[in-house]
Structures are given as C-alpha cells and as structure tokens.
Image (cartoon, rainbow, N blue to C red; front, side, top):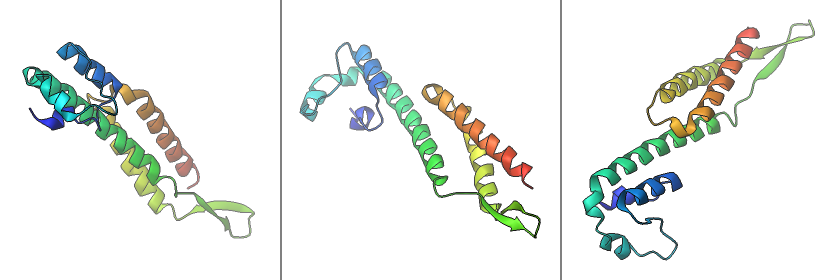
Length: 143
C-alpha cells in the first residue's frame, strides 16, 4: 500500500471521515498512533477508494494553498496617489504592477472556480473574485 494515500498533510476531518466510512472503522490518528497500526489495518483492500479520497484532498489542498498565496501577494501592495499639478486633486501613480497582479489573479480565480474540487471553498473564492473585480473598477475609475 502506498503510504502517500494516507498522507495526513492534505486530509482534513471531512476526508478522514469519508475514509473511515469507506473502511468501516476510524482512521483518525492521534498523536501516538504508530505507522505499524495503519499498516496492520488491511487498508490495501480499500486502496482504490482511499486513493480517490486522497486525490480529492490533494486537489482541494492545492486550491486552498493557491488562494493563500494570492492573498499574501496583496499584503505589501498599495495604491499610491500623487498630487496632479496644482489642482488639489490626487491621481494614482505606478499602477502597472497592481494592474498586472490584478489581471493575473482575476484569471486565476476564475479558472480555479471552474475546478470540480472547489466545493468547500466556493464562497471564499466568489468573495475574493468580487474583491478583485471591485479593485479593478476602482482602478479604472481613477484613470
């Protein structure tokens, strides 16, 4: 049996519950569960279904990580305003980096929202897409 099928780094409680239901007993480990216990459960009989659950968990985890990365890329980004001549009005300056990141993230989030594995994160991705689109409208309004 491939150990990576049960790699717990990508399995959340829902995936562990699905896996446990599939094999008929709890697979939820505790801090002192030895690997030998997992190997002695005869899980190889359920390998195909466990691999499916593990694959889903990995894809969901990848989406979750991609969202976290996108959000972190905005942490140091800010709109910079400069005075426009002697009018008392400020305008946006240096928006190229913001526009490139905004365009890139809008495409990414739309692509990720079409993933069949988006289910647990759909609301978060919709909200993020809405924020990106709002930033786009704001940026265009200041041109």
